[in-house]
Amino acid sequence: MIHVRALRGATTLDADSADQMAERVPELMLELLGRNDIGSDDVISVLFVSTPDITCLHPATAVRGRMAFDDVPMTGAQELDVPGSVELCVRVMMHIETERDRADLKHVYLHGAVVLRPDLAENDT
Image 1 (tube, helix red, strand yellow):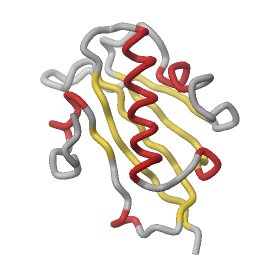
Image 2 (cartoon, helix red, strand yellow):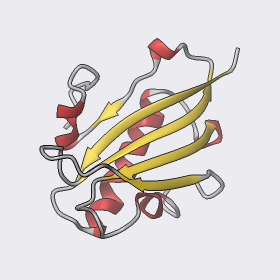
Image 3 (cartoon, rainbow, N blue to C red):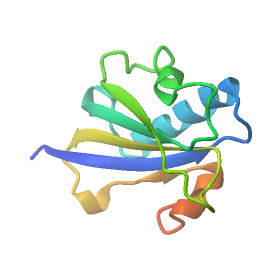
């Protein structure tokens, strides 16, 4: 049976750099797709949330044109500016169609974002 599920993940940048955004966000998306054995046709929509210290580039722009996501609705928002939060962080929630149970989804946390959910990280860098 096909279900609608939500995959989540996050990554960080080392600096507010468009080049690094263009590298790290597609890396995160490819890991989410690969670890869950899904393709872009299985993706319903994507929501990106970035910390306020990121102003270089929209995460959706980093994905469009670099991956087969041109017909996938994507939007972005700004994360709450909470003291002590992980800096230069991009979070994603990807809505997908899958036969997997919710417990079988593999969420991805890369680079400095591993601290957000170390219980879900799988030897991420």
